[in-house]
Length: 468
Ligand code: NAD
Image 1 (tube, rainbow, N blue to C red):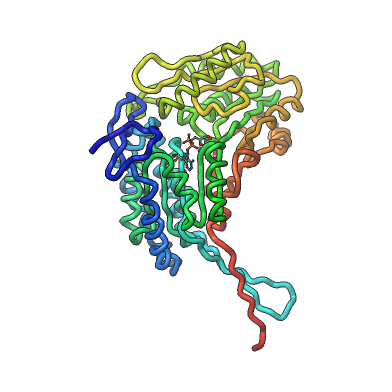
Image 2: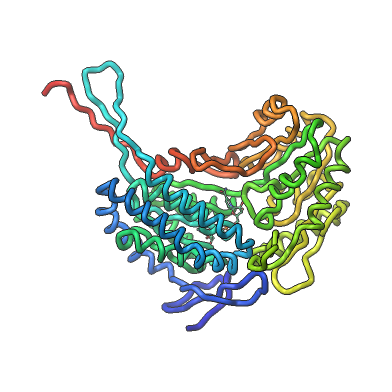
């Protein structure tokens, strides 16, 4: 089969495959089908056909999804190394993604959208019943391929919809394997994985047979997805970028929180929508905070995700590494100081040194935009109002956190953050049961918990008189 590199702009022709690279080496190690956008008519048509049977019986769906969850866990030793190979993350983090995927399937399998009576005093028995929407398009990025796929397909399938899932061309392989494992537990065409380059995703998002597009990715692509879906007036859920701030209070115990704060920024090599991407420290503690984080950046074990002992893998792909280098170089040119790192590593693959930037001008793009990599700017503040204003002062609103010893005081500050989730002395700890909803440019709609299920359902109301 002919192969080509990811991210080439031209779509493939019939039977073509594209190469998948190992970010730890930069070398191709696998390939995936480069599907043409015009294949989607048949794919969506089959998803629509399969929907008729899948929506009919909730108990059958629950049983199938519970079986699917067991199957995912059983296949963990096969899926995890593949995920690490194409994504770069340490193996333990790949296993965590798989565990989360199974947990999500179980959670949504058992969530019951029970009919709800409407009581308003009239002599009518009214009831809200929840109906599925139809074929759902799920489009996901490369940072958490399985976890994000499951966040979409588990509620969509549990609600009685069928799903066409498109992973990023940088990370198609573990998702394809997941699809094979899940499909063994599901009726045919209830879940279909499509892989390929743009405009495959754009065509999927705007396909007239798709009734809900659930998308996770960058803000510009999210806008394009929403514009595309407008043509068919399908429902759209967008989980987009973030630029989360961590605000440290004057009573923070720096040494006590430093490990947790560091990993809240650097887990998955900083490629987490809800990573800490800016730290605001009181001026009096500024040098202590910079030093504590720099010391952890200098000692973190960077290496291939498959190597035992690796704590921080490579950046996932070459364009992303270039972006991280660009933000860092710009900050250094603007007068910032690299307290740790500040450069890519001189070795094959897409490795960048964990980087702590001090004395960064607040308007440097590494502060105002989403760097999405192993780079963390630390900024001093003089008054708490100034810190809160800066934390809220970007176009993003995904998450935020406040760190201190007096929990009441920390909660009062957390309450002032303009975002979807605020943590105290933690960051990015999410429950399956909670709503997940970014504000401003960070998203549209609500995922997670029962809200995620209802986001895949429509209300259908039956009015019945008390007497004929
Ligand atoms: P991206 O927007 O480039 O791509 C995301 C997905 O969309 C990929 O599958 C891609 O192939 C596809 N795509 C590209 N162009 C498209 C188009 N015109 N129409 C439809 N689909 C298209 O994002 P990325 O670089 O893969 O991922 C990083 C971004 O994802 C970051 O901004 C990060 O913050 C965000 N993200 C958000 C969340 C969240 O829950 N809010 C979670 C993880 C990542």
